[in-house]
Structures are given as C-alpha cells and as structure tokens.
Image (cartoon, rainbow, N blue to C red; front, side, top):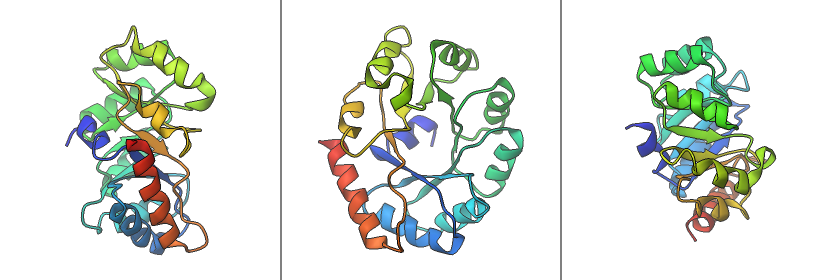
Amino acid sequence: MNIGEIMRLAPVIPVLVVEDAPKARGIAEALVGAGLRTLEVTLRTPAALDAIREMKKVEGAVVGAGTVLNERDLQRAIDAGSEFIVSPGLTEPLGRAAIESGVPFLPGIATPGDLMRGLDLGLSHFKFFPAATSGGIEALKALTGPFAEARFCPTGGVTPQSAADWLAIPAVLCVGGSWLNLKNEDYEGLGQAARAAAATARA
C-alpha cells in the first residue's frame, strides 16, 4: 500500500505512546476490533520498537512508527517492521532517505514553505502538525487553495468533538487520534473510545 491508501483505511489513526511492550498486542486488538486498523506507535518510549513488533502480530493491523526525527530513527523503525513512517516535521535528509527506502512516508508540515519543500521532493501527503496551534481548521483550509494536490492528516489538538469538522475538509483523508491511548489497563474502554471516534468521524 502507498501512504494514501494507508490513510484511507480508517478516518482516525490512533497516535500511540506505549510504555509497556507486553500490552501492545492487546492495545492493537482493541483498536483493530473497533475498526481502526492503521496504528501509529510514536518513538517516544524505550518500548516503542518492541510494541511495533507485537502489534504487527494482530490480524488486520497496519502498524507504523511516528515521531521519526532522523535517518537513524527511520532505519530502526524499518528494521522493526514499520509499514509506514510519520515524522513531526520534514528535513531534506530524512525525506530523501524515506523516499529511497520505499516505505510509505507521512511528514509533518505547518507552513506553505514546508509544503513547497515536500512537493519539491515528490511528496503529496502530509501530516498537518501541530494542527490546533498552527491555525486550526481555517489555516488548513487556506493551505488547500494554492496546494490543491496535497492531502492531509491533521494531528495535534484534534479531539473526538472536532474530528468530523477536520474530516469535512475535502483534502483531509484522516485525522490523528492522540486521545486513543490505553488508560488503567482498560482495553474495553479503549475499544469503546475507538468505536466512538470512528463513528463520530464518519458522521
């Protein structure tokens, strides 16, 4: 799958901070069972790479790495089996390395200059980040005018209440669900939150 196909698998991509790798499979089962197949595991914890390996064991899960900051992170994520890569920003070294690797890549952008650099590299799908503090919905709508070919996944400050508003923008294929993380071992509650997120986003 290319990055556009991955983004279209579900309206919400859970953005996951996993502290304990043995819990990762249960997290993935709860989310995939609720209809959210695309899972982004952020490289913010020592458990992240092992969590990716565990989540990939869940049938139907498409597991990628987020918070990829440089070429070293990229290689570690690919070696762990990541099926896509998400970065909070875009540098030319990381962009070129990701493109050369062939892995589906979703770099972060916040400004017209960011977008122009991405387009110059041949990219067309971007994470709008941090969405809420980079001008919100109106800012992204403004960007879609001069950059009509670009497609987006707003992340950062998107909530269950605002997800549908973001998804109403034609250029938005999905949103990042940072609120969908396991709390107090409550896998059932996580599944319920995921189902609600998917239903709200589709409304």
